[in-house]
Length: 230
Image 1 (cartoon, rainbow, N blue to C red):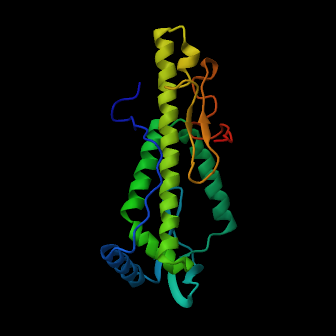
Image 2 (cartoon, one colour):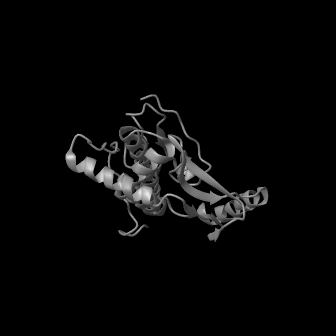
């Protein structure tokens, strides 16, 4: 049974609101973010391999497409062997990650969404410089990133709740275990990006599969994603 600290409550999915640049205070914050990011032009960024910072002799640069002479950042030029090793390390760690409970995964996603939200202006500024987008376009990209994180967070939390409901029913030996395994709804726990018109995710359970028959990849990374016609 998950503890109170582990439970991430599922709220109805809502899109991250856009910044209203018609307001003077928001324009001022964006201008400050642009200055901050520009002051860091040319900074070098290491890559991470198996939890360790790695730098290479050969470097690559990211430039402003509107002003190609402006170097936004310098990054590492990984070799084929480095890429192969990264894939092998990730595959090894999967044996551990696949056993991380859905509620715990939801906490990671919630934390990531919070970091992006807190640094929204700074990330908007980076998109403006590195991709050449307008303020409004950059803000839409960062808001969409938050949307994806929140959507996946809600899916993970729902899977955890559905699995707990099924486990509770099994322990109590209730006659309606099959319906209980479907979470706390009549048929399934369902989420969709309605505003995007994209595919929804159905998390359904039955007694035979422990309450998470179709995990959408959130619970064990090998479930199925069903396209749900909303």
